[in-house]
Length: 212
Image (spheres, rainbow, N blue to C red):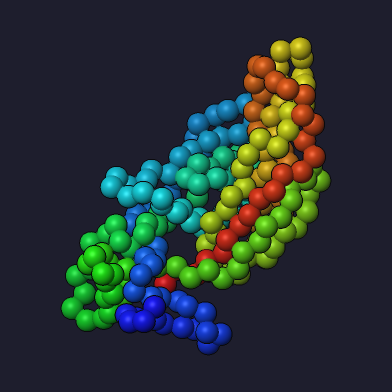
């Protein structure tokens, strides 16, 4: 752009400008997986009204097999129910300014808020795209104090049980005490009606963030 505001990092990548909104925190809490399905316990993170295209980040508990996609969380029965802290982020042009008396605010040409130093936001630390398979494999190591935005959920395949029922498989992931994240395809549900599609692999992603 020929005028406005640009903030670059040490590698000359654009961090903030006066045209694109960033994501800021609009709610937080913990979700408890307490709805029973045949292979998993499910829960849904409530999204605050008035916002669109929200992003949900999670403080992943240690020792739980989880499947997460957007604001939906499933804990596998292998490790029981889980309490999962979350934070919901929305685009800054959808929120009202903070009440801070000092700091920096950036607006675009239509007077929409793009950046507010009085708001909680996140920076991307790492991103990984990986295949989840029936056997367990390590996909990443989560840094201490970071949060994750996972896309680790989907029907990866179906194994017939009877003529009318099949076991549905989904990718799950597991955090160890040392931060290592494992993944595996595990049975998610048993339902009537299916097409025989043996689970082999499923593409997933995890974005690691630092909340500031």
